[in-house]
Length: 73
Image (cartoon, rainbow, N blue to C red; front, side, top):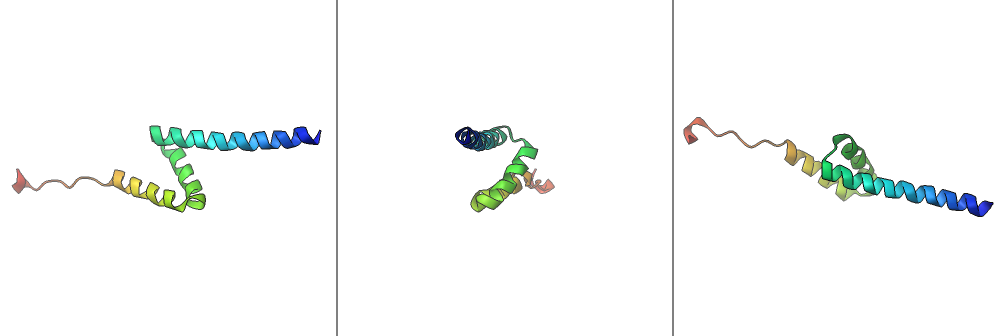
C-alpha cells in the first residue's frame, strides 16, 4: 500500500513539472500575458538570469520607435 501512495505522489509531482514546462512553452509561443507574468515570478526565484532577460524583452516590446522630426520629411 505504501508503494502505491509513494508512486502516486511521484506521479503527481512529475505531472506538475511537465504541466509547468508545457505552459511555459505555450506562453512563450503565444505571448499570453498572464501566464508569462506568472512564469516570470517563477523564473525570478529559480532562474534569476531568465527573469532578467524576461524584463529586457518586456522593455524592448514597450519601447517605441522615435518619431521623425518634420525636417526629416
